Structure formats: C-alpha cells, structure tokens
Length: 511
Ligand SMILES: *[C@@H]1O[C@H](CO)[C@@H](O)[C@H](O)[C@H]1NC(C)=O
Ligand SMILES: *[C@@H]1O[C@H](CO)[C@@H](O)[C@H](O)[C@H]1NC(C)=O
Image (tube, rainbow, N blue to C red; front, side, top):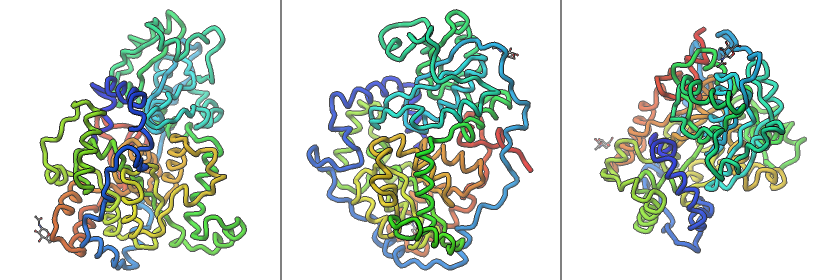
C-alpha cells in the first residue's frame, strides 16, 4: 500500500494529478461521492456478502475474559521516551527577512498539514517570511476550505513568532503574486523545479537568489519537497513544534470534536440533554468511559489500485478494472500477481468485514464504543453492515452529532477530516485499516503522546483470511500472537522516513 500515496507525489505524479484534476470535468459522474452508491451510472455490487462466514460466526459468539479486556484497554506503558523539542538550541528570528515565501498545497487535510510544517522550515532555512499557505481546492474531495477555516491562524503566528515570521497575507506591493498570476504564464518568481525531498542546500542555492532578486518566491508544487534527513536538530524539532503545537484547529472544530469525545465516553443517548450527560459523566468508571477509533479507508481509488478481489463478483471486478483504466490510463498495470498472491503479501486493503474480525480477535467485545473515522466506503452500508453486526455500538459523526451541530462542516471534506483527526488523537485506542496519510499523521501524533495505536499485521492477516479451513479459536490465537508489540511501541525513524510519522528520536528523548 505504501506505493499508493507515493504514486501521486513521485515520478508520474504531476501527470496523474493533472489527469485526476481534469477528470471531473470530463466524467463528472465518476467523482460523485465515491462512497455513496450512484445507481444511475452503473450498479457494481451484488450487495457484497460476508466472505468469511465461519469466522464471522465464531466472532459473533466470542468470549473475552476480563483480563484480556483490561489488558487491551490499559494505557500504553511508559517506554522511556518523552517529547523534547526544546533540547536543541532554539533557532532565533533573523534580524532581517530575506523576502516572502509563498506555497500552494495540494492534497487532503493531512498531506497539506505536512506541507505547512515543511513551509515553515523552508522559510526558516532562508530567513524568509512565510505567507499563510494557500490550500488548493481539491477537486476529488470537492473542498475549498482555506487555512483560516481549518486552523487557528492567530495561534499559529503567535506560537512561532520568536522563530519564524509569518504573515496572513502579502503586503500591497506584492499583491500581484497570486495563484491566478502563476497559472497564466511563466513567471520569474515561481519556483517549480523543487525535487522531491530537496535538501536545505537546494533551497539556499535555488530559492534564495529568487528572494534576493525579487523579494518573493512562490514554490509550487511543494508537497513532499523537503528532505527528512540531514537537517540540523533544531530544525527537525521546529518541524515537530509546528505539527504538534502550532497547528491547532479553529475553535468550532475543537468544540465539535470535544463533544463527540464526551458522548463516546458517556454512553447515553447522544441527543439527550446536557444535564443528563453530566450526571452520567460523574458516575462513569474508568473502564466504561473508553472508546476506540477505527479509521476505515476503503474507497474506490484504493480498492481499484490494489487490484485485489473484494468479493463483489464480476460486476465489481469489471467496474474496478474500468476505473483503473480511466484514472491511471494503463500506468497502473493489472497486477502480475493473483489475488491470492497479493493477499498473502499483505497488499490488499482490509475490508470492513476483515477489520471487524481482526478487532474481535484482538479482544474488542460487542459493547466496544467504536468510532468510525471515514466518510466514504466503497460499497457503502452493505459493506459496513457486517462490521456493525460485530460492533453494534459503532458511531460516527452523523450518529453522534445533531444536524445543527454539523452544519458548519457538512460537505467540507477537510473540516470533516479535521473533526475525525481530533477524535482520533483523543481516543484510547486508534487503529487504521490502511496505511495512508491520515494513518501516518495520527500515528505520529499518538506516538508523540505515547498513546495506544494498533498496527495491523497485513501479511499475517492476508494469509489467515486465505485459509478457508481455519476455525475461530485458531484465528484468534494467531492474530493475538501476530500482534504482540504492535500496539504503538516506539519505532525509531529510519532514513527517508517521515518525521511526522516517526517523531523519535528527532523530537523525543530518552528518560
Ligand atoms: C539567517 O540568519 C542567521 C542569523 O541571523 C544567519 O546566521 C544565517 O547565515 C542566515 N541565513 C541566511 C540564508 O541568510
Ligand atoms: C489453515 O489452518 C489450519 C488450522 O489452523 C492449519 O492446520 C493449516 O495448516 C492452515 N493451512 C494453511 C495453508 O496455512
């Protein structure tokens, strides 16, 4: 799966991105909510049925001992690492700014988040002033939310003011430097050649001269354009400071997230009045007030890209093959592996049914408060229903919040994702069914705060799900044995890996 995201950002990224961007113009129907069924176009599903009936039967009758439960829900024990972003000497604000840095960021909420952090660092390296990054309208997600609509700008600017100077907008003399200006022609102040994972030196050699000549440089594309390695410790720590402390959501997002967290912790009628909830809150014991977040990313892009078979029959196979052809124009080849080979290599995203079986085997009982962080599932409710059978108390934004509470975020993918991010970071346990940007961002944040995060063993699960003769108790045992040490234990960042996913050791110290 790792290849999936990289695909958009690496080699053919630009071309693919262009095609993806243009697609809605030519095939608007393709992009009508990917997760919702649009029967007017084509019917791809003979409503997917459970594929692992014997296991499902076992899971529905699972018995989980109190000991297992308390182990599962206990906090992650201290691992000898704690956040430290003040250990290196703090970079000081330069006496004089070398000019303005502008960036235009593509992608969804979490990809843009990494871009924002990198933009602060590039401004720092160049002693420049950063203009609040422009978030591109994402046509696939149909969201035009600006930085100011997602993040608390005053906090962001103030929090970093002693290290990097940041302004809301360009001064009048530079007001010509807009996205439209760069879209219309070749411009001397546009930097468009930043290589993926460019070094600090690259910026000093290629962008500093632009700043010195014109007083401004607009860098685009910018996603993934700053290296994770070979940067001074104080710069790395500043990256974490931006990500974990300077970037906070606007108050209404935090408030909505906080309400959802409260309702998950206090299992009463979510729409009941506040007074009743407060009473319950007082009485709630530790055990009952816990909840887990499942980030379920099982969308059509992912299903199609994996080239795996998800049990929707011939209609689904054809639909996914067609989607692959239209979107990637033959650049994502039909896999040379069979479905079976892909599965045993752990290269197929887990279906909602499979993730449900995994959770059941790990010891989540049917009373688990499970929050579903996801807004589109390929196959819709018919694919989720098996998961819901195993976890009848499953909730999401829609089930927990009233229509009025959701009005400000409704239909805005980035704001909805921000609410999910908030709830994910505040949960007792987080598990993601597919490694992607959201998973990586939340994993990094939770590692930084030593919170439990389950990392599915995809290869093991692929093999277990292929075994049609395995019974529930063998499955359960194999799953537990295969997930020892996968609950959020610190993994140190390796070269090339993202500091935002693996904040240790750069931003965490022993002790
Ligand atoms: C940035 O400012 C610092 C401190 O004033 C200075 O040491 C450094 O050389 C400057 N770097 C650039 C690229 O101007
Ligand atoms: C399938 O599971 C059964 C029961 O655990 C086991 O005996 C058998 O070896 C497994 N088959 C394969 C191909 O792994």
